[in-house]
Amino acid sequence: MLEIFQYGFMQRALVAGLMIAVICSAIGTFIVLKRLSMIGDGLAHIALGGIAIGLFLNVYPVISALIFSVLSALGINSLKRARIYGDLAIAIFFSAGLAVAVVILSISNGFNVDLFSYLFGSILTVNDTDLQIIFGLGILVLGAVFIFYKELFYTTFDETSARAGGIPVEKLNTLLIVLTSVTVVVSLKIVGVLLVSSLLVVPVATSLQVSRSFRGTILSSMVFAVFSVVSGLIISFYFNLAAGGAIVLTSVIVFLIVMIYKNSAG
Image (tube, rainbow, N blue to C red; front, side, top):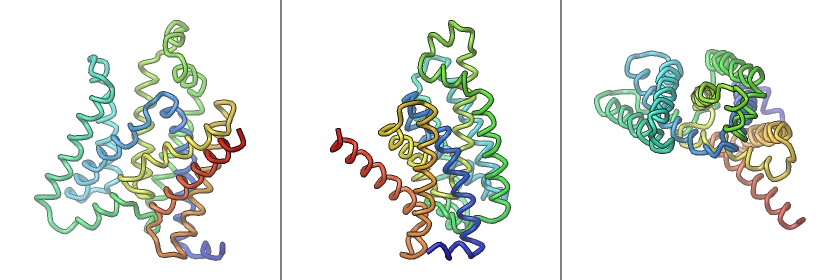
């Protein structure tokens, strides 16, 4: 079965998928436990506006989406500091990102197919440039999580005590939302705008069913995510299915199996 990975495009898809699985699990654990599970979906739709801008200006879409998403993430944080509820701030930028994409789509010609590939993912078309960007940004995200792990851990579970202990909570929250936006952007080519939040959330939800520690949750969610990526790629290859959808469906099925097993065993 694994002979399918002798093909160059499958090798690139596998490497990209594994990196995305790892960084989505690392960031996803923090956002799920901070009850921000839907922020990935909001940032993905915001990034769609950046992708449309890149395609319209003939700029590499991931770069334009990254700039647009990070600026929007900072904007969301600024609105939250202005005492606008977090979900409302996300909704405002969510709407703006979609509106930008729709307007540019309506006045452009010729890149509809490219835009749709980012909507639904196109992991099998990952090229060497995509791999370099995914790896570069992935290492950046993982490095930031490693450096600020203890501080992010404290702010995830008790922001009040973290502030009392002198930890710069607001700056760390800003860092987390920026890292989330970077993770979302590099994941778009893998599973697409419509499914990227699932890869951030579902493996973590599965891990929470079986893990007994925070570190264990991160590690086991990585295992579940990697399994979903590899299994989804194999299934999509042999059954001629959309790879992004196969990966996410595999992840959801694993979650259901683990949840049912845990409930029946308990």
